[in-house]
Length: 337
Ligand code: ADP
Ligand code: MG
Image 1 (cartoon, rainbow, N blue to C red):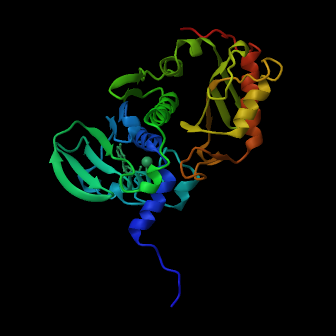
Image 2 (image 1 turned 30 degrees about the horizontal axis):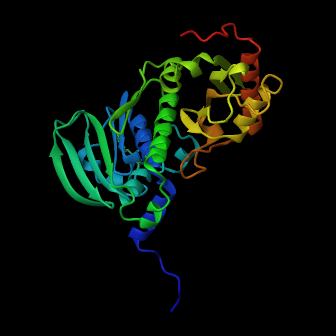
Image 3 (image 1 turned 180 degrees about the vertical axis):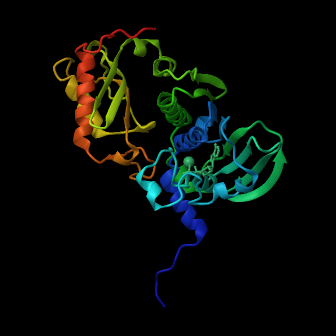
């Protein structure tokens, strides 16, 4: 008899969950992405004990139809893509159909959701991915997901979780990124019962920057706008005199998705070459918009890295836009507050 066997589905689910759900911040990121994809205009995130005991994300988006509620928690279940061709041009933040399944596999989840076509919503309780109860519930249109006791059934993962403040800070950063990536959505975050963040959701990147990063940071920014072949660049970059001791203030977004990109970091820093002190790094909030099919987002399990069909063009577009901003070629170098 051979030695190779297919894993039992529960074990396979736990392994898959490990890729997507590394820590509370990953849960926050995925749930907030779902809220944005559902067309929410307002999103509230609440965490307790750094997100380990409690994470709640409430949105006023489309809601989930009663007949879809259980399906949403199955692996590879998604409403966002249908076939192979859709992978070439992904316009939503999610598309893998893995997040809810992964989160549910390693926690206790409560869902309350209602669509505009239904007078009553659905409430589900799941433990370790297994549906325990289903009820009709009265609730506003939109979705609330509550995640309790993260990793209660995966002790190995629990060991790698850091202190509550550290996990809470990472979750906070995930909400900051979401708020900077979608200024048209009003975000609110409650951390250990304190309100930590509130953005107006008025569609202006400048007001989102002000609300998320604070007045001092906002005043240290220059507006930046430019384009390259098939790419638009827009946002804010540090005045050379306002560079900081870390790269922690560099925020890049591609088609509304927060990403890490060596090419963009290099292009940004190259533009400052003779303008800043050694050991200091520019901050930025830069949105890159491109044709959906010029970027591959199906590249990394948590989608924080993307691949451009032409990284040289990306470099050039970012470099020239930042360069122009630093050299005052854009008319309005002063950020108006
Ligand atoms: P994906 O986002 O990759 O499609 P998820 O596991 O995150 O996969 O979600 C599965 C499906 O559940 C989504 O495709 C969507 O139809 C639905 N869904 C999840 N969260 C929400 C939400 N907040 N509002 C409306 N629908 C949602
Ligand atoms: Mg998703």
